[in-house]
Image (cartoon, rainbow, N blue to C red):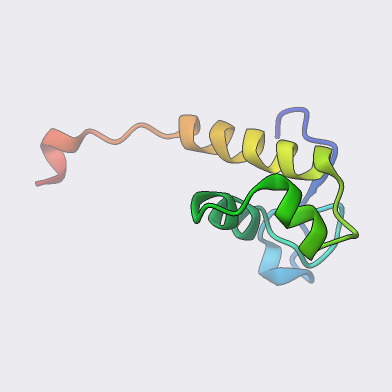
Length: 77
């Protein structure tokens, strides 16, 4: 994994999904909330144990993972 100090993966926590600092807050939840229009400030108010850098690193991690795979759409038909 690249340099993502705040992202942890443990099979015993959330089934091994990437989480924030070992908590039961997944990267997917954060990205989903942002995608649904929730602002970073709203996320921080709803989850006071999160820090701004947690949210930003979750977004960077998701972008990194999205770049990791290439799918040939022409052959996917």
